[in-house]
Image 1 (cartoon, rainbow, N blue to C red):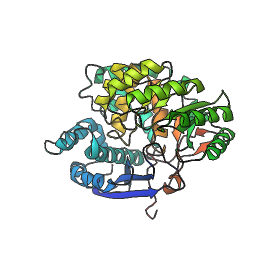
Image 2 (spheres, rainbow, N blue to C red):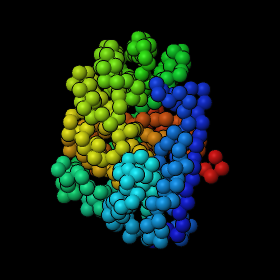
Image 3 (spheres, rainbow, N blue to C red):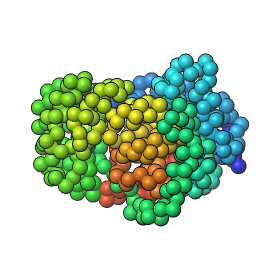
Length: 411
């Protein structure tokens, strides 16, 4: 098996144009990745990414250089056989953990490193990530995950039993490998788009096969959001699910007023209505707007905060993102927590869906999560060597070995 002989980083940034990516908080968006490249002695390269908004990506890259040293020289199979212990030792470095712990720049660096390890591992086995994960035994899966600080809700032994309990019914869910996993179109309603552009985008998304879409909200004047939300509902009809995303723009009183005003257009969820660490505010809002669920995830930084959200009943849609958590391994922990409570799982795709298209196949088939849909954002697809294939509104299972995170070096 290949051993890691060198580690490089890359500061990747792309400016978005014509209002794409804009929301109520981010008006001039730039998408970026702190990239980890693990070069093996057999010529393979594992590529890992952590999502940023451009500025500060260099700090993530510097943290990768500091934290990745324990990976150097490791055989990839031996490394992944004890990955939970390796990742925990890196995250709990007695000096560097002071910069987190489990959040911020250092956590993003661990995300990038972790995702690179999984990419190299899948490439070494010659299979896509979804197949690698599905072929692992429950015990092998558990050795990838750090369960520390979760024990009162989910132990490693309980996670093994969860996986075993779903093994007998896997065949009932494997049809997704032929039909593909449903997507929803996030690019319909960016905040800076005109009414006409949003209306046209919504109709085009339905024509392309999508049965769900997202509209950005969060204006200071709630009537602006209400008008545009009802406009989209009228354009696509009652049979299409419409999600509303405020990107943390509101205080709790503002969120209550806005969500109650928007409730009449029957949103499928309200996403990031307020400050992402405020579990109490989300719990209060969830009670006010029920049965419309509150969705959070792209800024919920670690498994411990996820535990708090779930314990409090403050989240109805888990949008865990492996490029914002500590990579694929911590994402698996959150997916298992969500399954236990249970709460529906629809990842946020800071990776543009490149990794999460694999992970939702695993979570549906191996954990029994409901097959809902996965966010689709196409803005960086031309930068990836093997961009996700979405056909008729469905992500088609990738066949290339790895996680799909290789980025063209000249882009």
